[in-house]
Length: 469
Image (cartoon, rainbow, N blue to C red; front, side):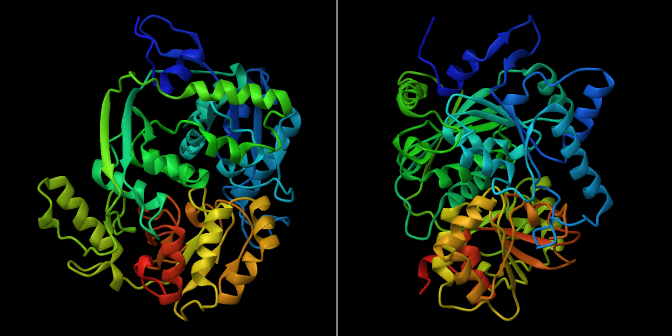
């Protein structure tokens, strides 16, 4: 048997509990992340079937999706559905002895920010959550993916999951990034190339010198948006950058156990002769900052681009999709990306609201003022991130420039809370999805990096951050 394995294959093989004939494999799950939106029905079904949570010690919960990010978050929640979901997760976690990071806890935050931040996320793990952007955790060399509510119940009851083995895709990022070009631009470029279904059926392993040079925050951004390209998960092999970032965090091993773990984690990397089912290479030497113009994450252009015409597309479906997007987004064919004026700027989400994201955005706006026509907001990815930023004075930079400095939470990323766009409002967003109505009914979303969002907030329209003075 060929024992040259990919990182994915090593982790998959290690976690197989059973491989029934002509059925999905049964995988053991190391970490189950839970939030208030996709868990109530799962817990209720357990209760009705008189089942218990098998491993509450391997389950952590947070409140993040539908809470407000203003200073009323610890008070009575006005929205009836949101209030019920929050009350229900509190009851379920208490009843099942599951650790919950509530809105008043310093450890509270977006589920895919606090997992790595607290050290729960570790290389070689299988990690699931009732949220598609669970792929974020793959940046640590973990196999992490989103699951549905019925699967949430299955994991709670058995600590296992039935899964068909996906194929493997290697994406190799070659070259170097220019100043002002980020991991967000890399992943938007990839999705623009392969489309929103290009990764369907695959787990993507990202590699190449550009990936190796990225910070952990950049790697998390790449893996976070793997799902936008249709992939089941995204992964990056752990290395010194990974271990340096993890060391000393709350839940990671300490002392001799740390040394032992690092030795094991180093073995996770893909073997030299391992074969992938598919391969893509992207050169980043001339990569520009990217901006989404349409209503899915594949409708993107470099900052130097112009709005396309339906006639530019060979396939009828692509042409129709372009036409629909132009109408929804209120854009004119041939207009420059840099001519797009904005009403709102949102710096937040599990994609781009970590401390380095906030630092880089703050460096752009320091000493400047938000455009009079723009409402700009910053929602840190976690309370600990917020506290760290305040310790460094980053909050003062944003507030002095005219940004609103808010509490942590998913916020405007998905519009399940009071932080939403009004109809026709146009927003530069550091989040991951630009679907119709994603950030509020008839809201218009443009996906960008934190640096691009920050510069756009000052100018009132998109600018090339590489030329920023």
